[in-house]
Image 1 (cartoon, helix red, strand yellow):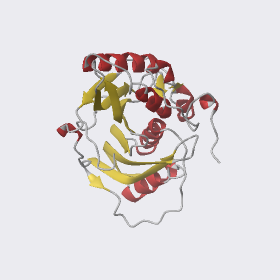
Image 2: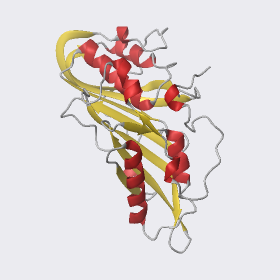
Image 3: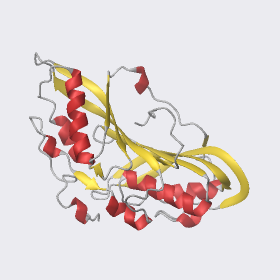
Amino acid sequence: MSHRPETLIEAPLGRESVYPDAYDPDLLYPLPRAANRAPLGIVEGGLPFVGEDEWHAFEVSWLNGRGKPVVAVARFRLPADSPNLVESKSWKLYLNSFNQTRFAHQDDVIATLTRDLADAANAPVSVELFDVDADTLAPRQLPGKCLDALDIEVSDYTPSADHLKAGDQVVEETLYSHLLKSNCPVTGQPDWGSVMIRYKGPQIEREGLLRYLISYRQHQDFHEHCVEHIFTDLMQRTKPTELLVLARYVRRGGLDISPWRATPGLAPPSPLRLARQ
């Protein structure tokens, strides 16, 4: 049975929803990042990484000045150093509050989204709107070497950094897997994803890395915190000089999230969307 953490007592996640019929920024439910970072030894003002939480919203619509519906796909970016993340169910309800709201111009929609999300995250937020047929939304593949064909035996389905080992040879490589799965920290619903790891340092033993990623299969946590957990374990166990961890989770409720965390100076590939998203 899932357990609702104290920080989620008042959250709309997991509750029956009544979808709004008017714009309401108060629907957004911010959650402090600090509580989930503390067990990893991450403290405010001393983040060991840079990064962003990149969201895509595929159910964005509003009315133009004449009452005609407009539809779009939105891309949002929240900085990893923002004090708060935004709970996804509240985000969906908030976006649905635009459905019967009139805006004279698309720029007014962007300005409203930017203001409200920045207020919730307590940090600057980037907002882009795309036509649903935009080429930039076409699915792509992750770069690097896929680990999923490795013939390994697995018996551990809760996170264990003991699986992570590295040799003496220093390499620079990119590895990825589509076998990432974690669970919602409240409802227990599955969150499916792909994870990419780009690093420079002692070569990571691939079988152990795949076992480690699979070990999140029964773990309950938010997407953002799973990525930070993976980043922290890799830094502590394999000692890379450079590291980037990017997860691209499958959409749920019209929203997908792709958090990434990296040592300063690294950045993810140009925005990409996987077929499962």
